[in-house]
Length: 431
Image (cartoon, rainbow, N blue to C red; front, side):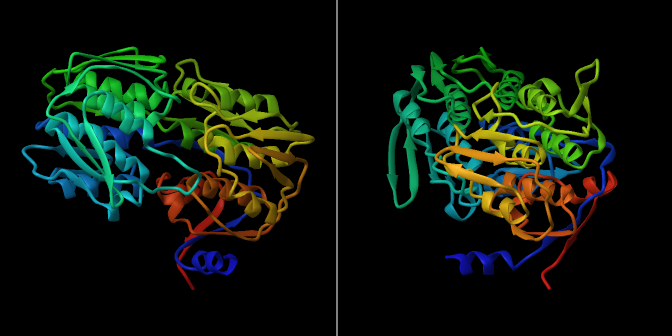
């Protein structure tokens, strides 16, 4: 299998990085990918136009726009503002050739069933970072009265009328919480979702829906209450800042010994990662308004242990990036992955650059104090790709990161933003 992966990685664009430059300056992060995608899907709930500002120009958003257009929805996107008008569209199917490219496409299931009583959605794909089943989505819809079947790689959901129920999730799944929250708006009575996800993106979606006329209580807590039957209307909304992009730039400043101000997000949404960076020895200063941070690289770093958990725990989407920082820190750190069982696939690539990381079950043992050296590496998923870029910024010599279509799924013009901070990084085509 190694030669197959090598051939795949050797085709397409790549990022070429010459490491050793401390990053300095100010960078503004874009809108949160994991919020914007769900707000777009929520536009299916009303025939009126929804205007969404601060939408990042990334591949995943383009794919979601294609999904909506395939359904018959009018989508216009210009300079970070998206207009979604789901008038009297006829489509009920999200096809495999689109859904396979992005797992978040499954979130159209709930709105379609809520508004029309039926949906056909391909079982999704996305980053290959472990099993991310949709059982909780389907079980919750079934509890609300939907008839669910799976045939030939598609989920079929039908309901003449959804009914409010008390649903207990096995795990605080973000996707299941979002799908069921939107489906519940088309149900009769009150739906209670217990063990609901608490992420800032959940809160942003709830705020969007409330502005549309929904009655939702408890967003940001483990218990969500949704009143069904409200007539929803169009809305204008601004997407929250992307906390994972902010965290990526924070680690970039740290691993290069730089000094970077990061704006456009709320540091409270990244509280634990920033606290872990302080424990490592990075200087992190939050502004008084709670809308920016300044990150200064330290002279000497020390290892810490990290365990990923749903919000407000350490986000799994920051695990690959923090591992690069821990590889530079003195001592041994243990990184425990509690969300996705296959999220250590990128470790071999980091080790090629001089890291010393071994995997034991769902633990990564990081032996720090390493000097990284540039080489050719392959991004295995979105956040792994970001981590390899960070390692390239800290490494001696030239690093080539291949398969960067993964990075484009979640970062808007990453190399341009890094270049403005002083990084020597450029995108080149296949030779």
